[in-house]
Length: 350
Ligand SMILES: NC(=O)c1ccc[n+]([C@@H]2O[C@H](COP(=O)([O-])OP(=O)(O)OC[C@H]3O[C@@H](n4cnc5c(N)ncnc54)[C@H](O)[C@@H]3O)[C@@H](O)[C@H]2O)c1
Image 1 (spheres, rainbow, N blue to C red):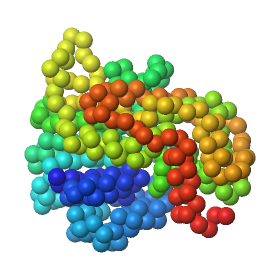
Image 2 (image 1 turned 45 degrees about the horizontal axis):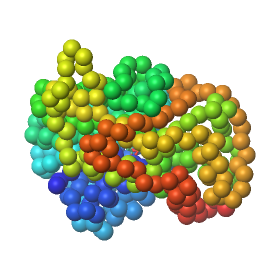
Image 3 (image 1 turned 30 degrees about the vertical axis):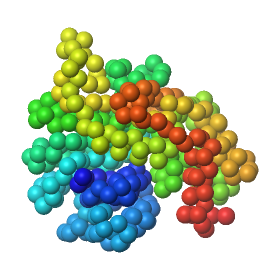
Image 4 (image 1 turned 60 degrees about the horizontal axis):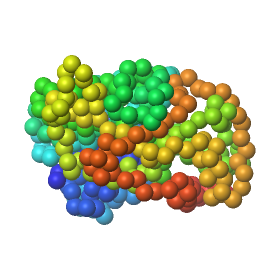
């Protein structure tokens, strides 16, 4: 298959592009390499995939995987997307590019509408006009917002987001449905639940915790530690995304407009949770890091932050039923691999 992967310099995109290329797919990656967090980490992710130059003029071919290429660009640049989709005939598109981060969306909402709404519509437009029929995109557990019914199920209503980030992810799902309905494009939205692992995002708790611990600084423990997260290891996420790419969504023949299921449609549209289905108390996650590091981390217990939710817990039974999805990485193994990577990548931290 020839697959367009956006967000390829990002945490999940770099891992997905590598896995797809390794199994023989032809991959064209795309990313604007923005400076929301350290761009050196993004460059290093690209280098780890054999990409050592980046341009918006031509494809950079990987030195280690000849079937993997990269082009630098912004989803908000419709002309560039049109040019790429004219030059290449893709069998599938996976959209992982987004302005991520819940907290930053409270101070910089416009970067979210630009990348996650304008950029998303641009992508849908070029997909539509070039005849691509298989579109997979990242949504987020944050769309559940104020919903406290656990575990989170795709069949629950999700109309009460509490951050601009989450609202743009919900907008993605609604736009995807519209394009599925109007143009018969198979769209599958995956609601990721707190992904962690090697090459992880520096703005997320696992990196913040390990970095502070190694520097001997204290970590901020929000809501006084009374939080739960369905931490999901990167390999389990990549495995699930590939399963979904390989089996494009079809319409739900049982879908009833008088009692509409939010996760499916009479159009080829589906939403799935992709998580570990095993929520971990924040303090247990910190404990797993401490066990691996071999020392106790200094902690500052603080209140809840705006835009955040107390718990996330994914019901993944739909993904299991339709794709045989099975996360296999234990917390101990996942945290172990993450800490090992962190220490070797940031060698200067003793
Ligand atoms: N990591 C998680 O726990 C998590 C949880 C829920 C949802 N998600 C979603 O999964 C996707 C991937 O997340 P990630 O953790 O790899 O984030 P990331 O920030 O590491 O990767 C996203 C990449 O997209 C690029 N990008 C942003 N705006 C762009 C634009 N307008 N044009 C081109 N490229 C652009 C960034 O430069 C970045 O490299 C995102 O859509 C994110 O919202 C992630």
